[in-house]
Amino acid sequence: MWVGGVDGQITFYDGNSWTESYRYTPKNSAFTSIEDIYGHNENDVYAVGLYALDDGSNQTRGFILHYDGVEWKEVLRTDYHSYFYRILPINNKEYYVCELRLPIDEQSEFIAVNKFNGTKINNILIKNINELGSWVELHKVDDKFFIVLKDKIYKMSEDGALKLFLEIELTNFNYGLWGTNKNLSLIHISEPTRPY
Image 1 (cartoon, rainbow, N blue to C red):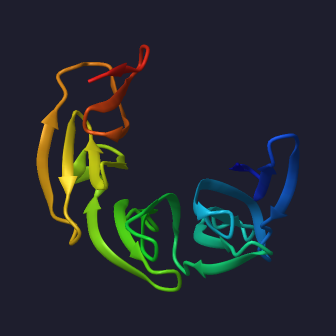
Image 2: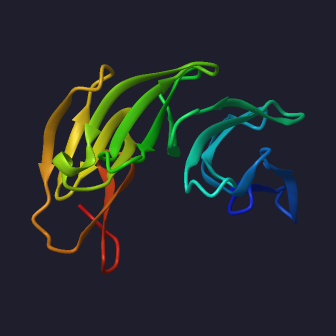
Protein backbone atom coordinates (compact mmCIF):
# COMPACT_ATOMS: atom_id res chain seq x y z
CA MET A 1 0.00 0.00 0.00
CA TRP A 2 1.29 3.45 -0.98
CA VAL A 3 0.55 6.67 0.92
CA GLY A 4 1.54 10.18 -0.10
CA GLY A 5 1.48 13.41 1.82
CA VAL A 6 3.01 16.78 2.46
CA ASP A 7 6.71 17.38 1.96
CA GLY A 8 6.54 15.16 -1.14
CA GLN A 9 6.85 12.02 0.96
CA ILE A 10 5.69 8.68 -0.44
CA THR A 11 5.54 5.84 2.07
CA PHE A 12 5.01 2.13 1.44
CA TYR A 13 3.35 -0.42 3.74
CA ASP A 14 4.49 -4.00 3.08
CA GLY A 15 1.94 -5.61 5.42
CA ASN A 16 4.19 -5.33 8.47
CA SER A 17 5.76 -1.88 8.58
CA TRP A 18 5.81 1.55 6.93
CA THR A 19 8.92 2.68 5.03
CA GLU A 20 9.57 5.99 3.32
CA SER A 21 10.11 5.03 -0.30
CA TYR A 22 10.69 8.43 -1.88
CA ARG A 23 10.63 12.15 -1.23
CA TYR A 24 9.92 14.42 -4.19
CA THR A 25 11.77 17.72 -3.70
CA PRO A 26 12.05 19.68 -6.94
CA LYS A 27 14.61 22.47 -7.11
CA ASN A 28 13.26 25.89 -6.04
CA SER A 29 10.21 24.44 -4.24
CA ALA A 30 8.81 25.80 -0.98
CA PHE A 31 6.64 22.75 -0.27
CA THR A 32 5.37 19.68 -2.08
CA SER A 33 2.20 17.65 -1.67
CA ILE A 34 1.28 14.24 -3.06
CA GLU A 35 -2.48 14.42 -3.75
CA ASP A 36 -3.32 11.01 -5.22
CA ILE A 37 -1.68 7.66 -6.03
CA TYR A 38 -2.80 4.86 -8.33
CA GLY A 39 -1.08 1.64 -9.38
CA HIS A 40 -2.01 -1.28 -11.62
CA ASN A 41 0.55 -3.41 -9.79
CA GLU A 42 3.64 -3.03 -7.60
CA ASN A 43 5.79 -2.19 -10.67
CA ASP A 44 3.52 0.41 -12.25
CA VAL A 45 2.44 3.16 -9.83
CA TYR A 46 1.69 6.84 -10.50
CA ALA A 47 1.46 9.74 -8.06
CA VAL A 48 0.16 13.24 -8.76
CA GLY A 49 0.37 16.47 -6.81
CA LEU A 50 1.71 19.98 -6.62
CA TYR A 51 4.66 21.95 -5.40
CA ALA A 52 4.88 25.64 -4.58
CA LEU A 53 7.62 27.81 -6.05
CA ASP A 54 9.93 29.38 -3.47
CA ASP A 55 10.21 32.69 -5.35
CA GLY A 56 7.41 34.48 -3.46
CA SER A 57 5.03 34.30 -6.45
CA ASN A 58 2.52 32.00 -4.66
CA GLN A 59 2.44 29.85 -7.78
CA THR A 60 2.28 26.08 -7.87
CA ARG A 61 3.19 23.47 -10.47
CA GLY A 62 1.43 20.18 -11.10
CA PHE A 63 3.50 17.02 -11.46
CA ILE A 64 3.21 13.30 -12.19
CA LEU A 65 5.63 10.72 -10.77
CA HIS A 66 6.02 7.07 -11.82
CA TYR A 67 7.35 4.07 -9.92
CA ASP A 68 8.63 1.18 -12.07
CA GLY A 69 9.28 -1.29 -9.25
CA VAL A 70 12.80 0.06 -8.69
CA GLU A 71 12.62 3.84 -8.41
CA TRP A 72 10.35 6.88 -8.56
CA LYS A 73 10.88 9.37 -11.40
CA GLU A 74 9.21 12.58 -12.46
CA VAL A 75 7.51 12.03 -15.82
CA LEU A 76 5.65 15.33 -16.21
CA ARG A 77 5.66 18.82 -14.68
CA THR A 78 3.55 21.83 -15.70
CA ASP A 79 5.16 25.15 -16.53
CA TYR A 80 2.07 27.14 -15.53
CA HIS A 81 0.16 27.81 -12.25
CA SER A 82 -1.74 24.59 -11.56
CA TYR A 83 -1.89 21.39 -9.63
CA PHE A 84 -2.97 17.81 -10.21
CA TYR A 85 -5.26 16.29 -7.61
CA ARG A 86 -6.64 13.01 -9.00
CA ILE A 87 -5.47 10.12 -11.20
CA LEU A 88 -7.71 7.25 -12.34
CA PRO A 89 -7.01 4.46 -14.86
CA ILE A 90 -8.86 4.36 -18.16
CA ASN A 91 -7.10 1.11 -19.10
CA ASN A 92 -3.62 -0.37 -18.51
CA LYS A 93 -1.91 2.38 -20.54
CA GLU A 94 -4.01 5.55 -20.12
CA TYR A 95 -5.24 7.62 -17.18
CA TYR A 96 -7.45 10.57 -16.43
CA VAL A 97 -5.73 13.30 -14.41
CA CYS A 98 -7.79 16.06 -12.79
CA GLU A 99 -6.20 19.47 -12.61
CA LEU A 100 -6.96 22.85 -11.11
CA ARG A 101 -5.53 25.67 -13.24
CA LEU A 102 -5.11 28.60 -10.93
CA PRO A 103 -5.53 32.29 -11.72
CA ILE A 104 -2.75 34.77 -12.35
CA ASP A 105 -3.60 38.48 -12.35
CA GLU A 106 -7.30 37.99 -11.51
CA GLN A 107 -8.01 35.45 -14.25
CA SER A 108 -10.57 32.72 -13.54
CA GLU A 109 -9.75 29.32 -12.13
CA PHE A 110 -10.33 26.39 -14.47
CA ILE A 111 -10.93 22.72 -13.80
CA ALA A 112 -9.46 20.34 -16.36
CA VAL A 113 -9.70 16.63 -16.98
CA ASN A 114 -6.69 15.41 -18.93
CA LYS A 115 -5.89 12.14 -20.65
CA PHE A 116 -2.39 10.92 -19.76
CA ASN A 117 -0.59 8.13 -21.67
CA GLY A 118 2.48 7.77 -19.44
CA THR A 119 4.45 10.56 -21.10
CA LYS A 120 2.09 13.18 -22.56
CA ILE A 121 -1.04 14.85 -21.27
CA ASN A 122 -3.94 16.03 -23.45
CA ASN A 123 -6.83 18.10 -22.20
CA ILE A 124 -10.29 16.63 -22.92
CA LEU A 125 -12.43 18.82 -20.67
CA ILE A 126 -11.83 22.31 -19.33
CA LYS A 127 -14.42 24.46 -17.57
CA ASN A 128 -14.36 27.79 -15.78
CA ILE A 129 -14.92 26.99 -12.11
CA ASN A 130 -17.19 30.03 -11.73
CA GLU A 131 -19.49 28.69 -14.45
CA LEU A 132 -19.54 25.25 -12.82
CA GLY A 133 -20.23 26.68 -9.39
CA SER A 134 -18.15 24.06 -7.60
CA TRP A 135 -15.09 21.88 -7.45
CA VAL A 136 -15.02 18.86 -9.78
CA GLU A 137 -14.55 15.33 -8.49
CA LEU A 138 -13.91 12.44 -10.88
CA HIS A 139 -14.92 8.91 -9.88
CA LYS A 140 -14.91 5.49 -11.53
CA VAL A 141 -17.71 2.94 -11.04
CA ASP A 142 -18.11 -0.16 -13.27
CA ASP A 143 -15.36 1.10 -15.61
CA LYS A 144 -17.43 4.21 -16.26
CA PHE A 145 -16.40 7.71 -15.23
CA PHE A 146 -18.56 10.15 -13.33
CA ILE A 147 -18.03 13.80 -12.52
CA VAL A 148 -19.66 15.33 -9.47
CA LEU A 149 -20.61 19.01 -9.75
CA LYS A 150 -22.47 20.53 -6.81
CA ASP A 151 -25.62 18.40 -6.45
CA LYS A 152 -25.39 16.62 -9.80
CA ILE A 153 -23.55 13.53 -11.00
CA TYR A 154 -22.65 13.40 -14.70
CA LYS A 155 -21.48 10.45 -16.73
CA MET A 156 -18.36 11.43 -18.70
CA SER A 157 -17.65 9.96 -22.13
CA GLU A 158 -14.11 9.26 -23.33
CA ASP A 159 -14.06 12.55 -25.25
CA GLY A 160 -15.04 14.55 -22.14
CA ALA A 161 -18.72 15.06 -22.97
CA LEU A 162 -20.97 15.15 -19.90
CA LYS A 163 -24.48 13.68 -19.61
CA LEU A 164 -26.61 14.18 -16.47
CA PHE A 165 -26.80 10.87 -14.61
CA LEU A 166 -28.32 11.75 -11.24
CA GLU A 167 -29.39 14.82 -9.29
CA ILE A 168 -28.86 14.52 -5.53
CA GLU A 169 -31.63 16.14 -3.53
CA LEU A 170 -29.76 16.29 -0.23
CA THR A 171 -28.60 19.59 1.23
CA ASN A 172 -25.54 17.99 2.81
CA PHE A 173 -24.19 16.16 -0.27
CA ASN A 174 -20.40 16.51 -0.17
CA TYR A 175 -19.10 15.61 -3.69
CA GLY A 176 -18.15 12.01 -2.88
CA LEU A 177 -19.12 9.01 -4.97
CA TRP A 178 -17.56 5.59 -4.44
CA GLY A 179 -18.34 2.08 -5.51
CA THR A 180 -17.08 -0.98 -7.28
CA ASN A 181 -20.23 -1.35 -9.38
CA LYS A 182 -23.58 0.34 -9.97
CA ASN A 183 -25.28 -1.96 -7.44
CA LEU A 184 -22.90 -0.98 -4.65
CA SER A 185 -22.25 2.74 -4.81
CA LEU A 186 -21.98 5.21 -1.97
CA ILE A 187 -22.35 8.95 -1.84
CA HIS A 188 -20.71 11.15 0.76
CA ILE A 189 -22.77 13.62 2.74
CA SER A 190 -21.65 15.73 5.68
CA GLU A 191 -23.23 13.11 7.93
CA PRO A 192 -22.34 9.38 7.71
CA THR A 193 -21.68 7.92 4.25
CA ARG A 194 -24.60 5.86 3.00
CA PRO A 195 -25.60 3.71 0.02
CA TYR A 196 -27.55 5.39 -2.74
